Length: 159
Image 1 (cartoon, rainbow, N blue to C red):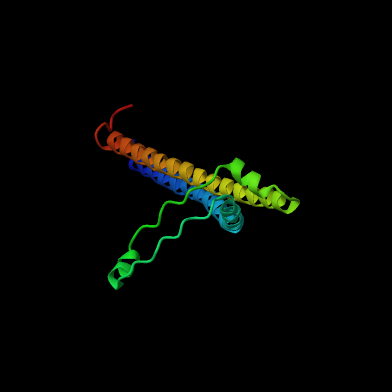
Image 2: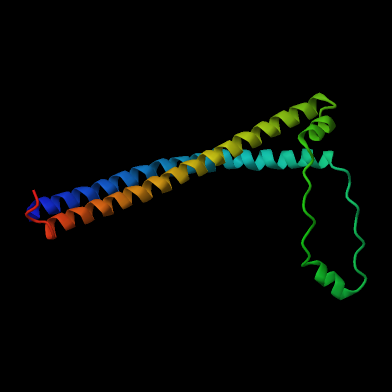
């Protein structure tokens, strides 16, 4: 192998790696813009509407009495709020399906939230595939350049 063939192979491998990794990033950028322009607003509106429908299905919470002293009120600021309990879907449907507007709200907000979540999942999936492909394209290129170097420097008369 000559210096010219060694350099040509290395330059081709690095340039191909640059082009291929760049093209996978292009797909990721398009998916991210699609999620930002469509998925995020759908998740935002659908999630807010769905939380309002869930709150109608939950029984009212017991109010806790405020602390009497100033230190107790100050320390209350640092307490974790109780975990939010999500009612089952059947209960949300039963409470909100009493009239046509409630049915439309459940179907509409549920559909918006589902489309937004699907868009976010698709974006995360594309990012994971892009990460995997980019990593292994880079490892393949490094391996190829290493193999070319070993062939050129150590086993030069190798056929």
